[in-house]
Image (cartoon, rainbow, N blue to C red; front, side, top):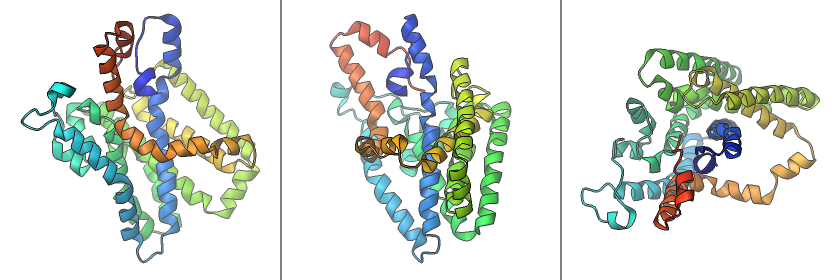
Amino acid sequence: MRHSVFGLETNVKPLAVFLKAGQLTWSGVDLFFVLSGFLIGGILLEARNSPRYFKTFYIRRAYRIFPIYGIVTAAFLFRHLPFQLIHVVFGNSSPLTVPWFSYATLTQNVWMVPLGWFGPTAMTATWSLAVEEQFYLTIPLLIRKVGSRVLIAVLVTVIFAAPILRLILNSQFRHGNFACYVLTPCRADALCLGVLAACLMRKQRFRDLLLCNRKSLCAATFLFFLGVMYMTHAGWSPFAAPMNTFGYSWLALFYTGCLLVALASGPGRLQNLLSNRILMGMGTIAYCGYLIHIPLIQAFRRILAHLNCRPAVSFLSGGLLE
């Protein structure tokens, strides 16, 4: 929705109000990081003492991630061969400003920083996948090697350190605001909040505390939501100074609150909604959809342009991806 609708621009006032209300839909990636930390952290905590701990984890992750990613990446890089085989059908490709090998090694987020941008639009979304893969290289070792108390202490330290690192990068370095958005250490607070939630939910005392204080949890989450509403009203972009210092942490805390509310909810409407088969089915294809949605949006806009749908094309090309 962010890349297809809410990232657009218009001079029509009622439509502009609607688009502004959805400006923070780009923060879906922050929700993803929290959920990923919770799910991956939970998987690793459950298998902590397994003799095949690392082997099982990395085989399963590779099976889940690399087949689809390999196909999408190969199709993208095929367009950048020295000889143009398919430009007649798909048009000329944009310059490959990010090295091709970075997509193969999932380090494209690092190579994007000197550019201060995402590089070729078709592979824009893969920066967050690179963050995810780099997270996989660190968290399994940490969970395996340290005890629960030390693990919680390390996670809390990282959660507090991430906004400090973003503050330094944002104020001291060229493209620092962009680095705050795409580099793994800068987004580690959201990931570690998810892992922390996974750790605490495996402690009976915390679960009891959560269940006994559901109203207080909902109230705290609502307060974080008021902050999100203000960010939306203020029109903060992902690269605005307030957002890439403390704003990402605020979003991560809000989404962690939403996660805990869902976990603490008993039988009722919320549980029924979260168990909806249609939504769960969408979840099974979400990763593939995430990888291919930008090229599909681009293809759709080219089709409209080819059909001379000028009013629609004018609107749909108004705001490019963020």
